[in-house]
Amino acid sequence: MKAGRPVSSNRFSALLVENVHPDADAALESYGPIDIERAGASPERGELKAALKGKSVLGIRSRTQIDADILDAAPDLLALGCFCIGTNQVDLAEAARRGIPVFNAPFANTRSVAELTLASIIMLMRRVPEKMFAIEQGGWLKTAEGCNEVRKKKLGIVGYGNIGAQLSVLASALGMHVYFYDVEPKLVHGNARPMDSLDALLAECDVVTLHVPSTPQTRNLMNATRIRSMKPGSILINQARGDLVDIDALAAALEDGHLAGAAVDVFPVEPSSKDERFTSPLQRQRNVILTPHIGGSTLEAQAAIGQDSAIKLAKYLYLGSTGHAVNFPQVEPGPIRPGCTRVAVPHKNAPGFLRRLNDAAERAGANVAAQFLQTDAEIGYALADLEGKLPDDFLERINALDGTIRARLLPTPSAG
Image 1 (cartoon, rainbow, N blue to C red):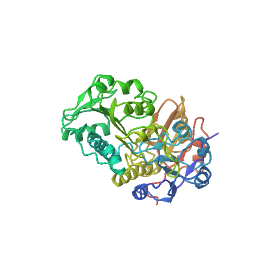
Image 2: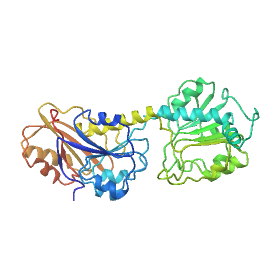
Image 3: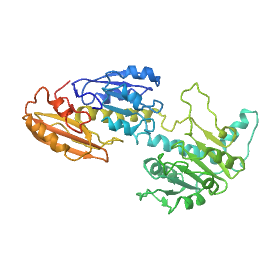
Image 4: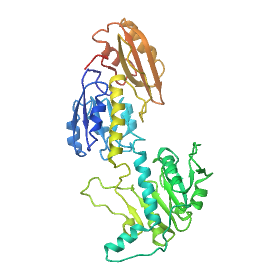
């Protein structure tokens, strides 16, 4: 049984939920027309299922959960865009099995997160949060005790990717001594120094900030043992993923003074809406900065995310491109050859499929002018630019091939 309907259409439709930035609209239409419907919040499951009828594209942010049940209600869905950084809210494997690539915008909020981290470092070093708490209670903690400049302090960055590297540059400009640890070799920016181990970094640095994804290897990365191995009086910042830190262990280390402060923007359990109450053992601490998952919540970042994710979706609809898809073999085919029709065929990765595809094209009287193929362990993705007039039932023939998940004919370049 095929995962979705065969598709041959010159008109697509999209549903964008959770207040995806308006700049996404123009980007979605950059390669051709698309009808766009919007919703301001994350819909209830039943409402989402109904709204997905006939939709080619779904655009979500972090709250909308996409699983097999939702995908069952969207047989026309071709692609899914996460207008955010993470994709944990989507069952990526299930989407891939149905021939649905998932795109996100992993680098669009880099500057925003780096700036929030840097601001948190300065505020915590000056012990501003506890002074704010005191002044709200009528107190007046006008003291320099425990307050420091960031200049000459040692910053430890765990994860030296796009955010970590940019933070490194900003912190160096303020005179901080930057150290970093990453599981892969990375190009060093400025005078930053790589560390041989995470434990060595924790013991050395006055501030430790996390910038790694959530994986089986990083979950609970900062457990009670590692938190206790941090330099006494140091600061821990997590503005990456909520399951990286043992929150109870962090609260205990703040309570007894082992750590001088913390900033946390992401939590193991977060409210599903603004009406749900947030609770955490960190709320009773004083020198902490707790923010509601706003690392990328700037106008600049949201605009960049809207454009980035939408362009990838548009290229997939009109060119078949899966470049930067998070769950799919990546193919960047370029423009469709003049006079050709492009067929896109996600399929099970098994021997002989490309031969069957080419045989079907030959039987249809088509010449393969260009062809692209990439595979991963389970899924293959083939594109072919075909010369010649295709029979009316060509798409049905390809969809009937052993291994096809769902075939589609892309709009011709002159469409729309």
